Image (tube, rainbow, N blue to C red; front, side):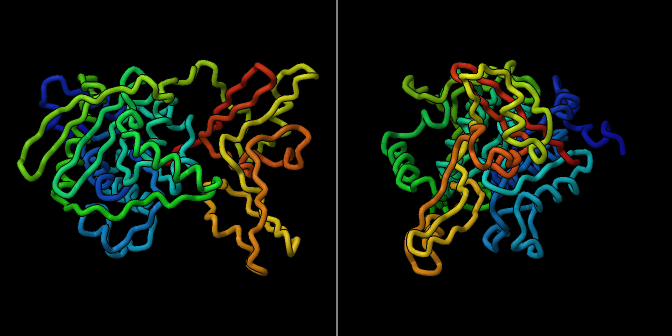
Length: 379
């Protein structure tokens, strides 16, 4: 079957350009109920490349609201199963699954290579982080959200318009700040209580999300800083304007012309090699910025027994700091920068927590070098 035959009905629409969809790369953040609907629609529309990010595994409650999951998939990673199902729906679509917290597995360079991002997330913290990433990467974001019998699709298309953080109330902003600032950098369970909803609501919001995505990908106008709001109780659909907060600090895209490819994979390049690679004066020793807090390990003040961890601190629960031998609170050893005199300077960037697609920053006095780590998408 030719592509022309598969997409015959949609190509009959005036102005439809199937080739533009085939050349697009769309990130879908979240592969739960809304993510399933969005992915199904993207696959059937013929979007060429899809990147799926999700940290969760399939639970029984997912089965009443997800087309791509089956009972045999219980306990498996949502991103992996969704990717497999998308390929079965349309083998022409290239799909990549990233299993994990988007803060640590989705590199900014990888996001910058996307045409569009779809937010199908279920908590405020993840939405706020994805919105900041999209602004830095210069990638338009369509954010989907659902309630019991309704939901909305918000368009955050560039730095000139509002972002997700602009839509939060002062109380919501304070709540997010308190949750993360009081965590001492350890993992915070940001999952809210499960929201009541149905597959019918999911289908409507997923359809609207994909419809807005198709319009953007086809070069048709979508109102920046707007929300397409659906009320399932009244059957009404309307578009509402969103206001940009002039005090919001997130509206500063990176200058991607300054970013150069890293000279090797993160699994091979050491911090020492990268620091030696950048030109600098002898008095201005360069510093590698990890972009996150890396928990090297714990040391118990009573047992004096070290334990290596070597993970981003945001992935480690605070309860892990309790010594399993004596119950004392252990001291965490956390680093966020590496210089040439640090004991881990010979560690590879991967061991230091860098992922393929990450944006890597090196500073020396007032000079800044930006590198993007390579990655390879697998069909």
